[in-house]
Length: 176
View 1 (cartoon, rainbow, N blue to C red):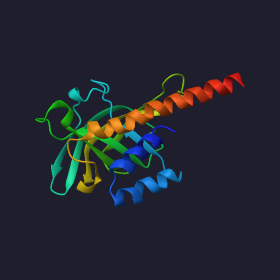
View 2: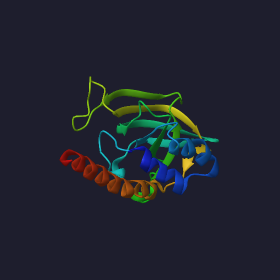
View 3: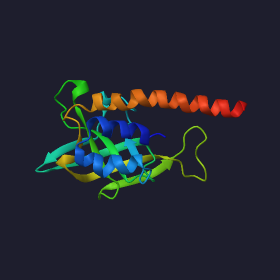
View 4: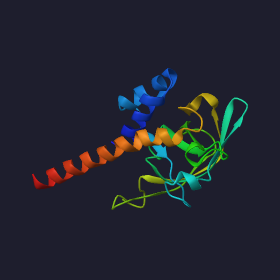
């Protein structure tokens, strides 16, 4: 189920052994849930206009910015966040991907919104999040610095197939 299936793919492909033990194993066992936090209010999913930044400060990364449609943030134990780390690089080599535990100070869920009729009682499953001085250890980087676009495509490519499979299953169930 999205976002966990795609986030599991990211962790399987790009996670360190420690990241896999801490996040992938319990995710696959259904003990925890995750969130994918990429799109932004001003530019959607176009990384060329992302304004969320992650800056290195010693052995930490400091994340500041806003993300929109962050799936399942209110249920998640951790978020996978795409942020600009190298603004002077070519456009598709400017962002990096980070694991951010939900309890990290500075994560503020502004509101949860629903999509496609999913909003029940005013609490949807896609969060508008503000990251303010969110500090994560340097070892929470997923993949190589500046390679988040490649990491995201690994996730999103499989995710498109997963969405199709779910749509077919729902349609089949409706006809049965």
